[in-house]
Length: 121
Image (cartoon, rainbow, N blue to C red; front, side, top):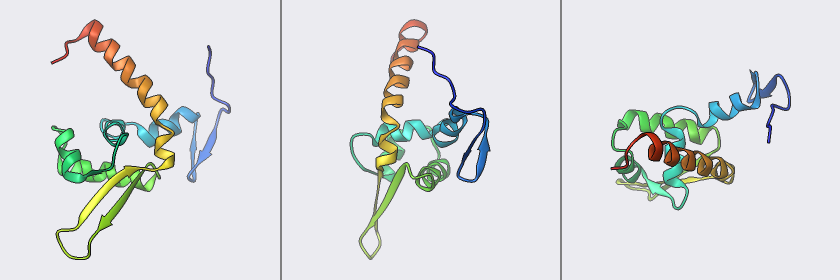
């Protein structure tokens, strides 16, 4: 099955992209965004839980990636309480949930690559 970009150029969030795949990569590309979404796919999590799931990410990077995902509408942030320590939960939005089929395909492909060329630990 051949999948092609619907248009040569697209406009999304006041930016021009050469293809819809560029839009997708802007939203979920990079080292951490898809991994964060992976860890939020089943339940909301606190920052500390995400930090534990992503052992090699710095607090600054995780904060930045979560803010970008929130600004793009993929992740929501809810703060509970009115006195410190506040409880903050991150969860996928309905829009973020729409990425899960692609994420499952990426996960399956990643498992295949490691099976054939790497090693599970």
